[in-house]
Image (tube, rainbow, N blue to C red; front, side, top):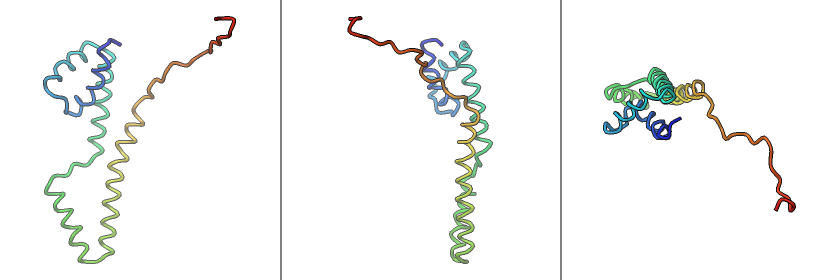
Length: 128
């Protein structure tokens, strides 16, 4: 891994999400093309982002207004109908959070931790 890889790897998630400033974007993409490790990480982030977008429903402003109106008018019609819609809304939020989280943990390989210590050196008074 080259010295500038750690900075690039931190910027990759912003790049994939479309939140990286244009000034930095070209430098990151140039590095990704020349570095196989960063290129693999970039491809993995893109796959995760695609899975996340596929699992997350996209609602437009009109659909959200219609849902809010239905919930508001359901309260006038009866409590039982409102409870059902609240349950469905809570279930939708739960699934919208669960699916991307599960996708992340299922498809992200474990990170390497610090190297294991094979032996511990003991310093005695004789060594000093």
